[in-house]
Length: 134
Image (cartoon, rainbow, N blue to C red; front, top):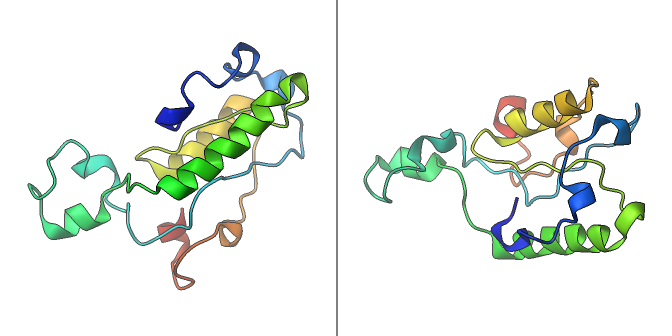
């Protein structure tokens, strides 16, 4: 999760519990738009900037976006403040594996399957292929 959010999630919301998820529930992605960066995965994350090729540096993940992080944290904080009425049943970070890793893990942990509408995921380039979005 966002580093600034450590400690804000209440203990009752800290473990994924499939009994809190029902068929038909929504999976919501809080993020900025998908972009043609990050397709290099985590391969550049352990290198110092400039040590790899320009192409690898450009496609590496974890580009900071303080405004989107702040907005996502506000949503999470507001939901957590609702206590037992929080609409968050499960929460998952999106790391180097991107949505292709995070969403299937979330769905698997809930014990269900899912239909994902990739075109509903906001992106900065409407010409991105499904592979590039996901």
